[in-house]
Length: 112
Image (tube, rainbow, N blue to C red; front, side, top):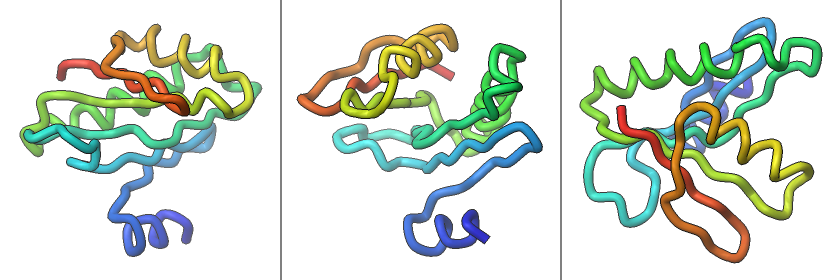
């Protein structure tokens, strides 16, 4: 039901597995003038972490994005959230690189 809510209210998509979920949207990063995908939220059950679940979900979204003509995948880290260093490490281990920073967020990207 939450996935339907995201689609209707924010034009976002959700990928769910038994181990976690990932929410994403297309062409929603300000200032990027070409097709792209943005991973908004990614969560994996603690017992399933470090088992490549996050990578598998991100890879599936990357495949969907490529089919839609996207050239870049973005992710961000809220620096005021719990454990932002862990989130940053996860995105970097997926091959994302620094795109920009602000007071509240670190934006990263990966070429598709």
